[in-house]
Length: 67
Image (cartoon, rainbow, N blue to C red):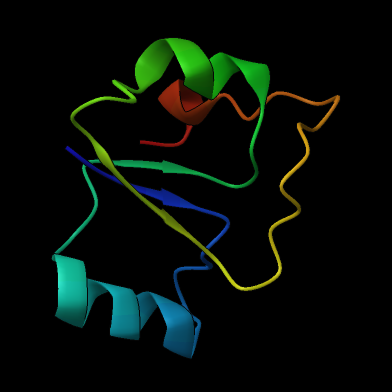
């Protein structure tokens, strides 16, 4: 599974990431504790945006409401 973290859909980073990795299977706006349960850290490919802090956010990005 390909996971994009903090890469805006309209940014040039998104287009570049899609060219290299393909379209994401999962997308989250920031790194949070919810994504820990959704990502298989041993097998998934996680692509971080340039400005994503490597610390966990206190807020949760509920992607199930977006798609």
